[in-house]
Amino acid sequence: MFSEISYILPFYHTVSNNKLAHVKHLFPIKTEQEFINDLEFFCSKYVPVSLSDFYKYAHENFRNLKKPVFHLSFDDGLYECYDVIMPILQQKGIPATFFVNSDFIDNKNLSFRFKASLLIETYLNENISFDRDKILQIKYDNQAYLDKLANDINLDFNQYLKQEKPYLSFEQLKKISQNGFSIGAHSTNHPEFRFIDYNEQFRQIKMSVDYVSNNFTETIKAFSFPFTDFGLKKSFFEDIYNSKLVDITFGTAGIKNDRAKMNFQRIPMETGQKGNQTYYFQQLKRNLRILLGKNYIKR
Image 1: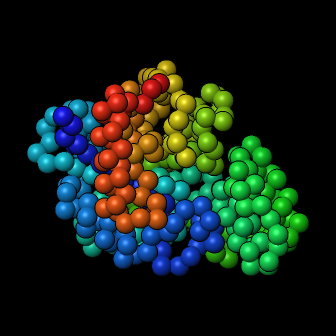
Image 2: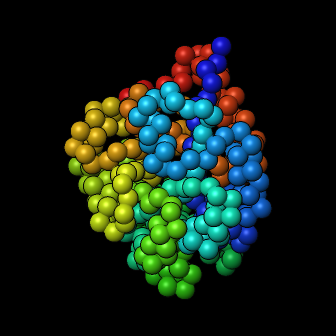
């Protein structure tokens, strides 16, 4: 009844044995051992492949696969991609793509979501009364309010960037690329695309893809949508592909098919569960959607 799964696309943001203040209030952070356990589980069921191989298989509609495959990716270009994740992947011989926000490289700026996490951490540490949900609900367009709240409690985001260096430097990213991993684009400064207009959507993709193309020897122009690709119309995908802006794009809807050709959905792995639990839950959801005829994303 259920079609065989040709591929899965698990993705993470970071891996750390430490509780990173800029992300700890946004999603659970996998420890190094938890991440290794996830990889071993994936490799027991799927063959790890590079971005170029996945792109080739996708163009062939996955007809020539001998075994099901997985391609691993990481969003936001966080520092642990260099000193924690890359060494583990090298040891296990697993390729991956690292999607980066061009405005954040070298710790030049901080994502509004990370600002929210830092605010919550500071409020808790200083025993200041606050509304957690209200902080987390602040959107991209209102991020200046986060700066105001930080100023009210003498929280200096720029100082945090200088001291903690949460993002990759350009030199670290270069070394990741030189070690054979793929670099992809993830917008300039991480907006939720359904809340910005068409021109800004197009600009965000072009600027970030151009940054990667101009600085790294990537043969494939890959883009992962920050947060989600929810609400984007099929015509939008046709525009960005027909203009040669990108070669392949990725969303975050799990094991789900997409009516936009060359847009593929990934599995968010930072769920607070073991990797195999997240995988089987996604499988269950997929099978239920197939039964209901709802496993395609409407565009």
